Length: 452
Ligand code: ATP
Ligand code: UDP
Ligand code: MG
Image 1: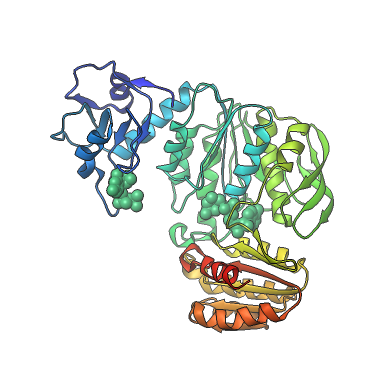
Image 2: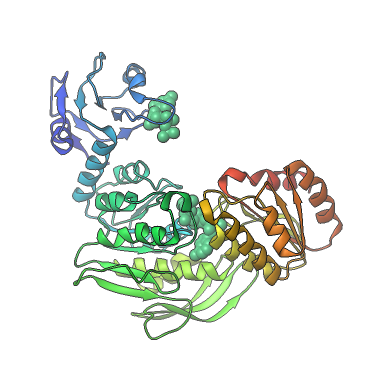
């Protein structure tokens, strides 16, 4: 972390200093979890759904915390800065850290593929300099500050993932990150319950462009965008598309989709380059276009792109190949699902060898659009000519029904007693397992691993 004194912390958060002998006390780490206290850190007491971290103050002081950021004065022997709202103060501190950093920072949001694009962008920029990037999925109003706290004076670049399930969330995190370049990866029916409608999703994700400075770069996916988005007059706007077209600054050609890898030529405003991507699926080419645009906007070369992408690896839970035996593969895509990512994954399974089985759980958080989305996935499975669909849960029954090759189960145990013998009996099998986080479809992947 970029350090600051307690006096600076109080100034940045408009807080009041209590129980302090020495306001030049230096803070160089932050923790929000009493179970993970770094030596000499500042503990920020947040209130969550289950716990109020103010209750752990005594314990964190014993564990080595040097100061507390709290909403009320606590009876513990430790310097404290008291603020009205610790979440907001955490954001103010993160914004300050970001301002001190010399790193060139890019940000991204979207319905799907944020983590995938973040990993690719970080892989590319790491070819050029020291790059900090969001760990795992820490992409909300807590995760984004936690990520920025990890910035050091050595970082040349940072890639920040921003997620949202309600309006104004991206406006808030972007105002902290102030990315030099930013993009919305795509718009699908994700978290519709929180946004109200597809237009609501577009508006909320588009908030990211308002946070890009005047001289910055707004990057737009021509295959998934909103006419209503507005850009500032002096912003550079770069467009990308999977289809070559006059307006696209970034596009692919000569695409060769293999089973688990993809070859293509990447065209950019600074030239073209042959890419071998160690990931399956057309949607990952779209992710490369996004990552390349972000990386080039802060100085990456075509060589950085080629070399960085060659090192990219599948992220666990995102179309992650798990080999059961020589000719039997599971694509573990159990991390999450919406209609867009489900259909993208079905297109990958379509190209896989042997008997192709889709094992699918419910997609959650879709509000009034839930039935529509499940039906659409069923139709996509039918059009892909899959050999079998096994669904489990409730709404996913519609996927089975519309696929016209489906069988539905209410519990996973029953599905497994049908799936496992079938997978054992076929010589060559490809199985895609996917569903929303709430469906916990990794149970199916784990059961398959045990049986082979
Ligand atoms: P979250 O909102 O949970 O953070 P995310 O946006 O970070 O998700 P990933 O974790 O990268 O997205 O991928 C989630 C799912 O979307 C995976 O199943 C992945 O294969 C799929 N996916 C990745 N990129 C795309 C894309 N461009 N279009 C459609 N689906 C995609
Ligand atoms: N917390 C903590 N120690 C614990 C349990 C929770 O410090 O033993 C912190 C946690 O890191 C978070 C806050 O208390 O900052 C609220 O926790 P909760 O689980 O309610 O919220 P969530 O993490 O689900 O938002
Ligand atoms: Mg993510």
